[in-house]
Length: 89
Image (tube, rainbow, N blue to C red; front, side, top):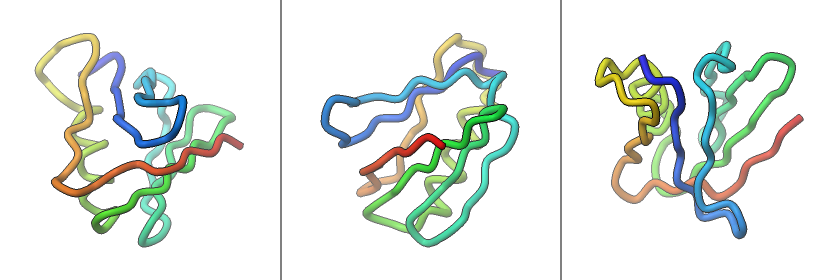
């Protein structure tokens, strides 16, 4: 299992998000454009463009449980998918 995942974004000033997988307690598909990652007491809402969020959701889960063993596993975004916004609450 990966220790960290990286998610490429098109957000100005934040080209890549790096998240500790030990902090991720739950991943939820919440709408056609949003995926939420629960990080303990924090909630990270990612807005996705270019395709359904189901494919992005599956890519995040795949990276989290990657048996490859590297410390940092990139989330392989499906063709045409971009993360356009991230909000922490």
